[in-house]
Length: 272
Image (cartoon, rainbow, N blue to C red; front, side, top):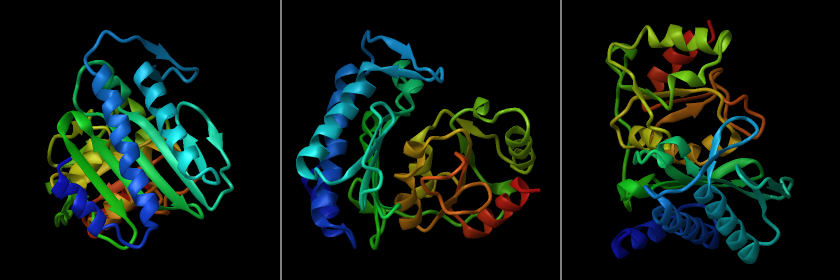
């Protein structure tokens, strides 16, 4: 990021602890450096117990971020995708996804990113999407507008599903039964071809007014907590498929829209 962008982040940090905002940016910087070192290299890819892929970059980035948090805020909790949980009953809990979109990362696609979130009493108050291969960083925080590379950004108006650009990370994330049936019902209303493989970048593009709907399932807590301050700070809405606020006990479904009217329409269809 440029010095001007970093200055803008400081000026726009909003109603969150300034030292926490500073650390969130440092965490994203550290993860980006590690991702760059391994991106499009001959690295190994392993499958975890749930059959999802993981690379050395995922593990190293999260380990580095956890060490930084423990050094700066030893009383804070941490929930990470790769290295387990610490003190989830703490007032402040960091939620980390070192590389969201590992399949894209491992195959050389640029649509991956690092997700950093800070929760206060279970509510996400800071969120960062760092799409390092694209040189794009979205930052959201309570009490301030969302920024893209230090410049405020907003969602756009789109009142009908027929006119909406929609995205999901993969068509295979919707399991047979209710998830797939609900998604198929919603997809039938889209008048434009859907976009896949965007991962966290799709939510950033929604916050910047380029995509109108992102609908997903089978997400972990680390996949969506950082998105909440970003989407809401840009004027959009993000919930589960029932329209309930995302939290530590959410069911893994996410629905983000840039327009509130669009969100109501989508929830009604998903819950038929």
